[in-house]
Image: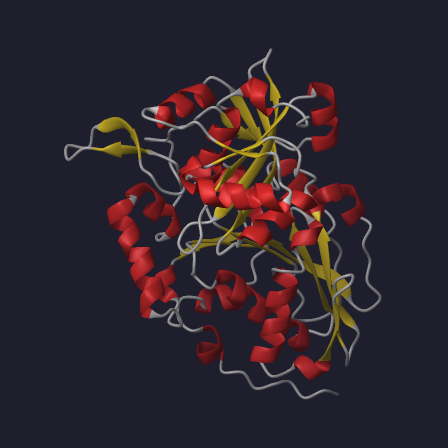
Amino acid sequence: MTKRPHVDVAKAIGGGYNRFWHNKQFYRVVKGSRGSKKSKNTALNFIYRIMKHPWANLLVIRRYSNTNKQSTYTDLKWACNQLKVAHLFKFNESLPEITYIPTGQKILFRGLDDELKITSITVEIGILCWAWFEEAYQIETEEKFRTVVESIRGSYEAEDFFKQITITFNPWSERHWLKRVFFDPSTREKDTFATTTTFRVNEWLDDVDRARYTDLYRTNPRRARIVCDGEWGVAEGLIFDNFEVKDFAPLEKIKSLQKTVHGMDFGFTNDPTTLVSAAVDKANKEIWIYDEHYEKAMLTKDIYNILEQRELLRTRVTADNAEKRLIKELNNLGARGVKAAAKGKGSVMEGINLLQGYKIYIHPSCENTIEEFNTYTFKQDKEGRWLNEPIDANNHIIDALRYAMENMKATMGVLK
């Protein structure tokens, strides 16, 4: 028998998560603000529970399987170290998979790339009784979610046995199915524990982080409601209501339309450098966004590497014209397709008006694009009236898309 570690729960998880830690209802749902430590606390909780319950195995789900390694797998490995029990676990990063050595219990990682394959998962020890859906907002339909939930079935002869689905996410839009299924009183699942956490319960944030969150109430109150308070994003004041998160096959869409556009916006310390790619259906006025890149502190060579990886060195990429030197450096390195956007007076609203004339479909893998479209809003005056002027924040992908779309004829195909 392996001695269970003595863990001071209050010290390990800090404030705000005591009810979450001990809850055993079938659905355990946490929507929260940025920095609310919901993912870290969930990871700690599952490591502790795996060691406590020898019959338990965990299935960890994200919308795309390749995002698990840098998120949930890393968080669970961190939790093992935090609880000083890493020596009792075997970590297989290539799968990825985590095994509790004393019993052989498993933590398995999968994506909803093909949800039907998940339903046939089995374990050798105990029962697959828990699932954790991380960043569940990226799951665009309730049907995909239900398919996986159905795989958590069966029973086990143990006095303390229970099955549970844990769901964690940032609540970008009130139109998402998660709100109806787990938070609206008239339609929510019966056996549900649902709560909201914020950065205020995270005692490990430093003063710089806290100041960054609180300043958002001044610069972008609507975004602060989501990012700081963990509340649902609302449609009021939203610049775009003509978008939809939709799963589609990018290569098939590109092949059928044969028209793609690419745009870049540059940043460094506070703002990211972004790249967005979309297939455009001019006849039906549709934009299909299929790829994005979003990263701070990128040097010229880093940007070149991203363009090379995506085979865009000779393809037209319309970029922020405020960085002409950077564009020239990229051209000199071999990224000949990067060209400055026209921009100019009134170009922001011109570009917005253009995009508003299309139906925009966003692939669920483009999580930063989804966030921006759900939080990009108009300004308000002192009386609360909406102005025809956007708040210049959280729009780096959208700016790149404006540049990409400003001259359709110039952005098609490979440069000669």
